[in-house]
Image (cartoon, rainbow, N blue to C red; front, side):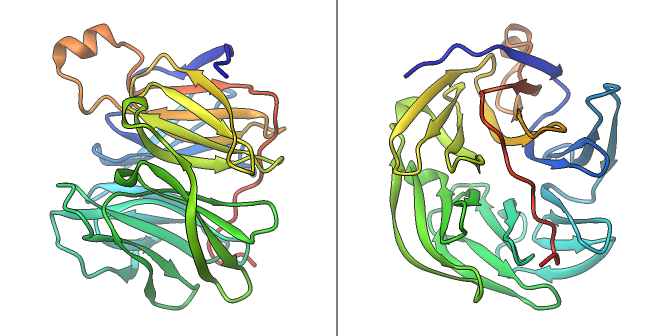
Length: 288
């Protein structure tokens, strides 16, 4: 079902490759990354102001840490307050960290991607607070969006080149995944599945990169809504606002040439809509 929803551009064309939106309830700000800038960005919806902090390499994600500061994926390193707390052994310059999320026990689940789309050279990693990075899912190409269902018995996960949202059985206490199966399939003509989030009703929202739209799936995998957007390359989604009813969408312009950028003025913008459902609070790294 195609839905017509009022969509607001809250930050126009500021990002080359905007990604990884995370709502910060303590400050009522939206955290995101601009991967290719590279920078970590904090945006205040109340004032319209934002702060950009440059990083030393492409930054795939930034997530709050329970003890303060942020945990970020910079290049192939996981960094917390300037200190490297994890490093993956993948080809430097060819791979980098991409999307990530923390489970309800404060573990970090962070994926890498092949910038050359070399099949099977990336992975999804698990990092226990105080522990070492471990491979949770190998053989990926573009590890992307991930989130959990309401009782954390299922992990939704995207390896974009598969054109699927997959679901893993999940053991929260042990931090282990089990059986994998396809949750939803995306036709290549509709775009590449990118970032995702789960709302308070258990619905799954996914950004279709190159498809210029969001999709909403019911917990049983039924396609419930298709929402066209004013950008061709939406990258990820997250609920925010004081009532967690604002759905923020990041987007990219890094694949557009000069002519296309003039035509697609909203590319690289942060969008906001209110789809009629509520989101959930984000878990911090190290918070149980």
